[in-house]
Amino acid sequence: MELKQLQYFMAICDELHFTRAAEKMGVSAPNISQQIRRLEEEIGVLLFDRVGKRIVLTEAGSILHEHGAAVFTHLQQASEAIADLRQMQGGSLSIGVLPGDADLMFNALLLNFHQTYPTISLSLLETMKVTEQVLDRSIDVGVTIGPVIDERLTSIPLFHEEFALAVSSNDPLTTESFIPLNRLHSLKMVMFPPDHQCRKLIDRFCMDNGFTLQPHMVTTTLSSLLQMVQSGVGYCVLPRLLLDNLHNKDIKVVQLRNPTPSQDICMIYRSDRYVGYAMRTFIKTLRTYIETAINHAKSS
Image 1 (cartoon, rainbow, N blue to C red):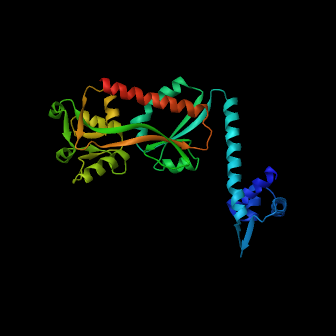
Image 2: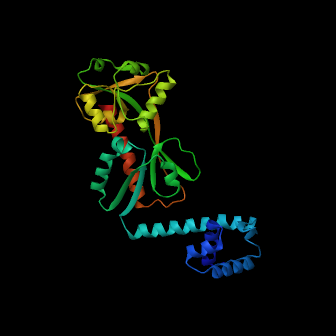
Image 3: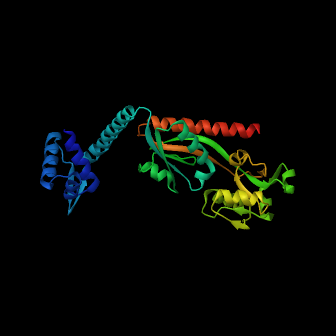
């Protein structure tokens, strides 16, 4: 069995049409048909059946398709490993995060990462389909809400994220160590729009506890939310880790309890992909960044 024959076979499996597969591979339809016949003669079984005008895989064809996919996955991994070696300490990495998380978590990290590893090219994409885009390889790494359970993915837990109330330093609420979640119902709230991940989480916790928030103001940007809190316009629920690391003396943090809104955050990537220098470095840097932020929050 030649590698070219296997490539032709896999192309036909993708298209389920000899002519389209031939066009995809840049060869003539008679040529690709001849190569498949030779392959079938060599292994002694038919790989495709014709059902009317359609072609379908035989049982033997399905077996070869499964193993063929594994062969090309290993070849791709070998190519990536060699490319990684040739690039030495460079490379590129695309990262997918949920909308809003770029502001909440990644801006400072990306700046520090670029200053420390200027030879690594990073691209950050906000997307609602983090898991799907990691699976279809349109992004390399995803940071999303866990748990993510899929045998095709490797999932690395990052941290348990709790949310708290951001309050102006001049507000009487700063004297309280915590407030129950249902008290938000009586406060003048400033919040992200309903389709933002943070807003969805808070809305879900509130509805589970028998009430719905009606924000006084809504904005899409973190900076404007913080400005309104600082100016005393209203209160906002944001990740505790973010608030504790703001270093803003005009904004105080009040815990939310009974219950505390929270979620698990994890990093995901395809289990069958080669983890090169760029990805290894980013994973290590992200985990260190989060650990440092958590430790700083605990000590402050």
